[in-house]
Length: 83
Image (cartoon, rainbow, N blue to C red; front, side, top):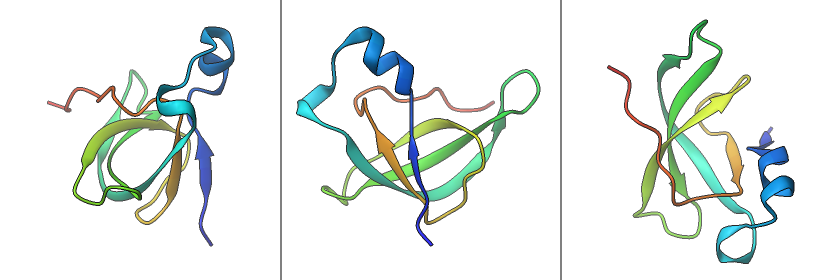
């Protein structure tokens, strides 16, 4: 079962902007670890479905595993790596 997550839902409606006119789908290729003050955020590496050569690191709140498909409303910003 492919699980689709909407990232930064309220940020999109308050800002009123999306890059390139619509949401972008990305597949989780690797779980990098947990971050946040209580470990509630998971840092993942994602690969874009429309451009398989391009991958970035994102932070995801909530349950996620390898193979999940994320709906990214903003695809240019990359999360800082865990130390």
